[in-house]
Length: 203
Image (cartoon, rainbow, N blue to C red; front, side, top):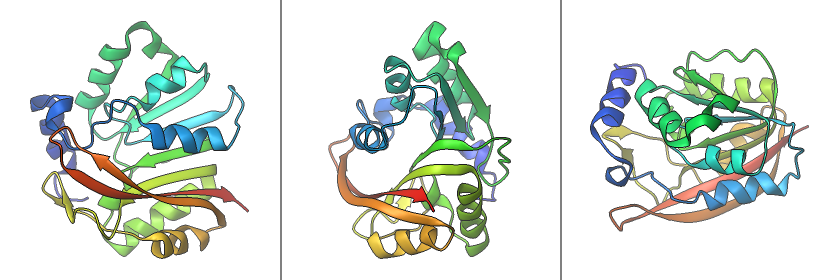
């Protein structure tokens, strides 16, 4: 993600509505299920990486979580989310940053990543990300395109994963896999994208 990635995503979120991009979910049920499986307290620190316009943050606020961070490379995406949420957006810490340049200043009890990690396509960025998560997360959930999913997203190359490869990537950095599942995501256009989701806990 080193070509002018920020401009690419700013342009998308400036020009397109949620029903015009493939990743939109009205209810991010898989992410919700994984979060609930950890039985975290409402005071737990939670980060949604690549949160963009995702409605996962809406669910977190509705459930009364008090320590929420949303990170996205696109300021336009975050501004849209803040506008949608309204006054409650003041309860969220919003960070505009490229995940490749992100330097956390605290640990997170729950790190959520739906469809950011698979945009990291070189060994160095994949290694740096996995090290960062192992250093700053207690529980981690990642969702990527599976080996049966798309090979590109928004015109960009991605890395596909299966249960074995995604587990190996993060278990080599002090995580133990808890659960993995394949999920068919129906896009706003009626097409199907197959994801692999995997949850981990620090050892």
